[in-house]
Image (cartoon, rainbow, N blue to C red):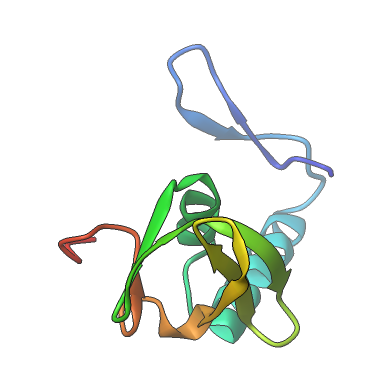
Length: 106
């Protein structure tokens, strides 16, 4: 991956490693298109992948991700490591049927 931004010593992101401003805009546009298509901010998906538990209308699920299918916009998870208890989350349903926090405050 070719980075365009870099953190400096003060943990502030700086722009570097690109030849034109258009290159930066093009890269940002790709990520924004992906977020729009998925219906969920990418940083929330990264946060989701680090969670121990995801909260749904059906209760809390241990976050054992089996499959993330970005083409169909869904995540397969299991509850308590039981493959017979498979559950399907739609990425676009973030904040509608599933949350990262139990109190839904995100």
